[in-house]
Image (cartoon, one colour):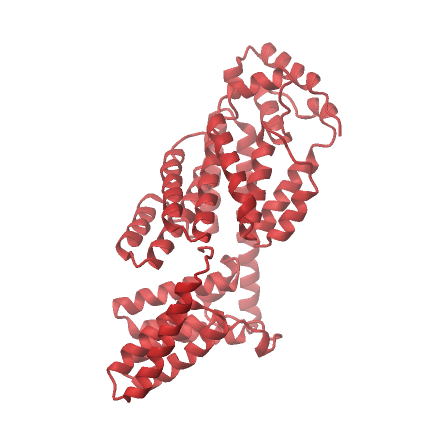
Length: 444
């Protein structure tokens, strides 16, 4: 595809001058004045997304420029498609989509967006040798051009890579930089507060998980408190939509109708999703269909979570909280209900095809509840079975916790010394194995 840059630049300059606008006024909240200068002097090609924003501010239609751009829709649509596949945890499909596009060159929105999506896909696939130099290149570019939202995403991705490569201090450093930047951006009118808050929430949770894994519970809890203190509690899709609509109003106030339209598109999408879910759940209730998730909150939770695994993880955290508070009966009831729902989930699958790792941690919490209620024999039998299941699905974190419970409970019973010694040997072998060959993983 050939592009005639002189015509685009000349048209931008001509209309800007007709409107009596300076380059700084045209650029405000969209790009830098330097970028406008490069576009007008034919040194940079604006992306379709950027051209829409400039056309809106100049008070003309983007079609005025389309004769020179050819078909601008395809690259933008394919970038969004790649983003979708990443959100759906399918990095291979994201890469396939990205590889169908010509590699953008700087400067411009498409250059950053393409390469940030590429970084995320390769990071999810564990291709760190390719990711690290690319991240450094993007970091330098974002700092030079003051692309703050891109820099926030770069810090987040860099932290993920450091974590996966067993450098927790490096991960904490990157994520703390991301928090400092994000908390500054969230109060700036040129950024969507809702979108930046979403980025920040993810980073707070990453820090929480890493510090929890290191046994630094006080520091981990402090990040959660900090997040709850500063972030709006968006419990419902309707509330998120309203927040995005407020961001759209702010975009209009700063003379950015292109940004406002994009935010309103997202707000409408949230409301449409809410209407669809509400309608489906009403029909299911009226029809009396047997649902795979027995309780109302689990059924609603599954519609809100991206998959059953993330929902079970949320349930696990809630149950642990109740156990720590001493609300044992409440925790046990919730655990049993969640486990029962998991058994009925996807009934067309055979038992062999179901993932044991979705239930193994819940079973461990059930054993803990039984022990707290004084049913030691039942708790011990369950935790021994959990050990076998955790070994089968290679859930090391759950396995270590199960061993800890098992040895602690055995020491308080009349178990024979030989039994305790045999279990202690298994724990020692696992710890030795982990010490010799610790494998990094992705938080969250």
